[in-house]
Image (tube, rainbow, N blue to C red):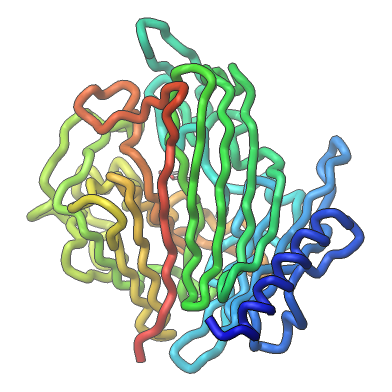
Length: 389
Ligand code: BGC
């Protein structure tokens, strides 16, 4: 590393440390964040919760000009601005421009989802012989952590600038019994914006008692730009040859079935809209795609690639998780007004949620989601942006 870079890195570290001590100092970037040349991070007030707690928005910026905004409420990725093939920036994630809409109406836009992302059948599971009861907030089932999951909690934020990357470490301690889950869960999610336009998410959790845990990020994407029509022309490829079929309430039947020959097979790049209205029973049950794909391979690997042909924007989802929920925004219904003031019609955003399989606590044949005291839950997912011309 050239010594000037080293000095700048040290200076950045010192500034970050000073900023943490002086709340009035909002800009924690090493230098002018707007000069296009250096990564930076700044903080602003975003809104105040009914109880009086203040929520901040952090803006992360890399040297390439990509900008990411993160809220301390729900650890929400509020906006992700990436260039198209001509270099024009657009915000490619769905969201709101105000806190009140996130609190009152958000269908999990951009949030950290937990303690258990996705569904647990009838809000019930048994661990070490004891049965736990959770909120049923999705018909008969438990969804995304319950009535007040991690998406609705206030996270403590610590910004950092390290080399060419800039990031935000978020921490939240969920007390024993919160939302019915056993064990005090200490959770840390580190968002890092790298110099090569990747958002890296490193999750870590420890528990005081045996529990279950399944964390994800629930960003909805539209690579044309949020509010800019539907996602049906996006070409999707998923590295999965199997999936977990669901019943009428979107709970896995327990089978792990082959995708080959079904309209859910995305091993070859295919436009999302091509088969989304098919009469296939699984697609009908989901109202479109709303399924967990059993990813091929192990370790940190590319799970899915999405190409939007008009803008040339490309999103790759890289993860070490065993599953990926592909949700084609079927429940968006044109009533939510998004960040730039436009309405979000049905299928105007899609989510690719890296995860353990839904309802794993009730399926012994699925990879385990049990976390015990002394063990560390650790997982990484990356949203990697690029372009094709
Ligand atoms: C689920 C959908 C749900 C959406 C928003 C997704 O993870 O699979 O069924 O509607 O989240 O809550």
